[in-house]
Image (cartoon, rainbow, N blue to C red; front, side, top):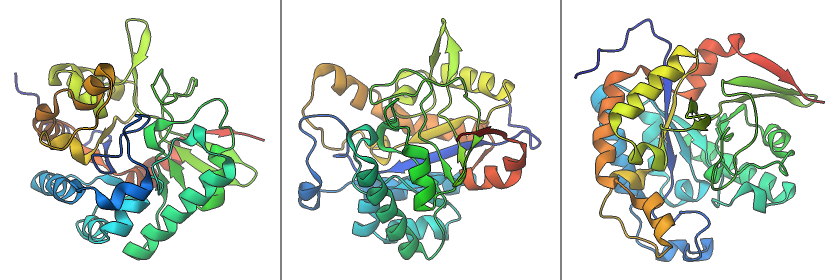
Length: 295
């Protein structure tokens, strides 16, 4: 059955792209180190441009979380995203798991990425998303480090079990985190209660695994809770022919299942949901968000 068109009065959800290449899969022994990346055949350029074209066809604006490495190697990509009206944000520079870095290492990485991106597009970069949503109970310094680096908001909290981290928190809606050093907007990855546990349906392997009917149904549940749905995708996920890294059968399934279904699902998301960027959502609704204070 065809879904009804979204109401023009509905509060928009958010569409985002984590702009990285096919060899940036995390926590796999075969993943090449940053020193080898320049020698590998890249697919990010063609795949990202394809995503921009899909967005143009439906008038959707997205937030593009660029690896600083990708922006430095292909500076025309963030420039083109900005030219087409999308928000350019940061995915860090070297795609390293947060919980494997010290605070100083993390701060250097995110500051470097912000500097490269801002120099490339000639505009401020407000947002950050960590590789693999890799916060943990041991990275309590994370949010204040982002404030120190000059970021305004984050979308790194995965409020459910997750292979690279997942942060135990009762908060699933966007909110402010206020510290003596400043205030940071947090947009947790969207989850919904299913069979007694929190589950995500809206990005990465989750979006590829579940049928669109389930994604649509669960997204409407998030909307009824008064939350925006945070959708996310990686450029390699619309490219079923991209090279594969050797890995275990379980990781291979998670990394490569249903790649051929991604583009069709994205087209339906673009049709069925009003979508905006993180920056625009904060501009419209920031004053309404709850404020949690930390000392």
